[in-house]
Image (cartoon, rainbow, N blue to C red):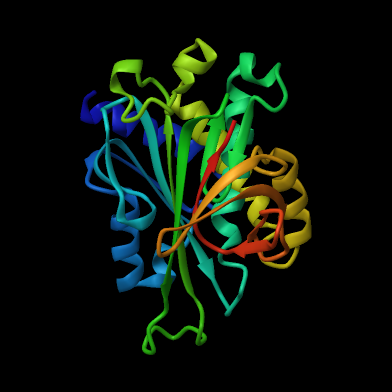
Length: 276
């Protein structure tokens, strides 16, 4: 891809998202990490970065949970980060990655006709993965940057940066693990990045109107899209403690509740594997 393709996509998205909360859309040819870039900007000027969208056609040092890193081949993934202003202290920050998962799954179904025809084929794995037929097609990372004392913002406020990567045109040979997939493989069609980005940003814009004051509405939508609820899972907690049981609930705080048969374990963080 060339610089002109980045410029063309930026112009398209700016025009199509006019009037939304996304006040500035920037598309770059290549970057280390869209999240790292926006986090750094938010640390310098939190108020200025809210509403900013950063998209990279190629990401060379993408960031995941637990400092995991990956690369996205040029043109094979939609790598995007958005900055959301957090005007006051809230205990609902953990819902942002779950909310983003709902937006991504809805966007995928909107632009991929074959997947839209089979309800439940696209679903969510707690806490931050989007799956197609139990293979990962997208990952999400939300980070919070607290406002500094001299930023003129309320204590406890700041900026949330939500990053996502959707595998669009990766081939089987390019998948980092056998449990990955892409839209081209799973849906059997090519996806226009502009259409997909617009669908994601529109859905995010809509869902963020519910956050943080209408969490039950978000929770209802999340539970309906969850592939984890009701499944036998292995949950690896921080410190590498393993729990095996049935995922019974996503509670009001966005935590997973796993019933092992002898106890119910509630976790705000961890890695889930669906067991078959």
